[in-house]
Every structure is written in structure tokens, then in C-alpha cells.
Image (cartoon, rainbow, N blue to C red; front, side):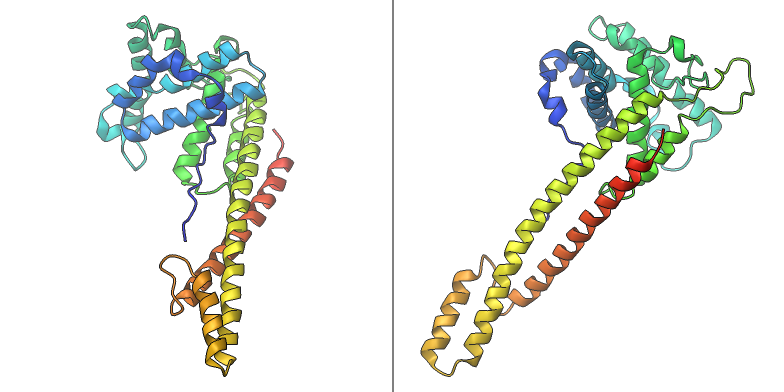
Length: 308
């Protein structure tokens, strides 16, 4: 039984733009990153592209913003591997080193004419609207829109990766955490922007739409697999009926007739001796996938009730 592999990120939007033509040189740089960071950059670019579509950005800005997203973490090339790939929580000193990837990325892009247009986003993608971000504690008026969009995509992908979602079931928990990023914090410093959270609420709302699209897409894929499983179950049930008829037949001619029908229905590596165990596996897979679909529809209801 072939299990379908679900791709958490739908690349349809990226394919709608001829991005490779515009950013071939920049994309080659991703190959110099460690695997985790490279995949993260690709995921953030995908989400960013789709957020831009829901924000009704122009095609040129969407391409620019998506390219910025591909390159937002390029400064991590200069972060020591023992810090970059550390599984446990970073120490305060290690986090200070990690934060410097924004400055390293900015400097690297600035020194290359091909990359210079994307330098500001490499620097600013961890800035927060209320002034609590880094490296320069900018506030909303000074943070470019592309950096605001990439911040949301970046945080969401980090949450998804950390929680290791295999499906969109319970992904509303990640969105609830994103909502917290919109809420204002107690003003403890005159430098903080009053009544402003860290992330742009409009972009968070558009993220909800992206996630809902993906859930519907997962349902579509899963329903297709369920339909395939149902077809196989129907085939096995016909084999069961043929075997029952064969065993109850008294004439050899009738037994041979039903056996012939069974052999026609059996597929590769299936035999009359093992098909029942395979039938049980298909029934189990069918039940699991039906349950996934039910839970995904429940997840949609939860997300639609969330307020930003």
C-alpha cells in the first residue's frame, strides 16, 4: 500500500511567477547554507509569496519580496555551527551571537551589487512594530512592508518546524501564538510604540487565509487517497465473497470458477493466503484518513473563529 507524501507547503503560487529567471544567482547562494536553514528560507519564501498575493501586491513587488525572503537568513553563513544547530535553548550570550546574522546578512548583501537591493530585509526581518525587535529596535514607521511580511512568514515557519507538524491538525495552536504577536505589551519604555504589537495584524489575517487554503488542499489530497483506498477495499470485499462462494461450492468446476475470479482480482504480491492481512491494513488506513479529514474540518471551524 503506497502512502501519499503530503507536502506541507503548496508551491503553486511560486510556480505562477518565473522566479528562477529573476533570482537564479541569488538562489544559488542557498546551496551554501546548512540544510535546515536552506529549507527554512525556501518555506519562508513560499509563504511570503502567497501573503503578497492576498495583500494584492503588484507582481514586481511580490517577486522582490519573495527574493528577499529567500535571502533573509543568508547571514547565518557566518554563525558558528554549534550555535546554529544547537537543539537546546540558546544561552544569553549565544543568542546575542545568533542575532548578529541580521548584520552579517546586511553587510554581505551590501558588498555585492546583485544582492544589494535585498540588504535591508536581511537586516530588518526581526524588527518588531512596537520597537522590541533587533538589531536596531525600529518601530512601524521605519520598517519596510517586505520586512513586516517576512517577519510573519519567518515566525510561522519556525513554529511549524519546531512542532514538527505532519498535518494541519492542531495548527490552530500555532496561529493562536501568532495572534499573541499582534497584541500590545505593557509599555515599560518610552521607546516602545504604544498600542502596537510586534507583528502587522493585517498580514496575520492574510496568513490565516494561506493556512486555510493549505488545509483545504490537504483535505482534497486526503479525500483522493481515501477514494483510492475505498476502491481497493471494494476489491478485497469482492475477493472475500468469491472465496466464501468457492469454499461453499461442492463442484470442482464451480470452485475453479471462483478461484479464477480471485486470481484476476489479486494484484502484485497479493495471494489468496495474504490478502486478508492486506485487507485489514487498508481498512486501518481508510479509518485513519477519514479521521484526519474529520479533524481537518474541525480545525477549519476553530481557525474561522479566531480573531486578530
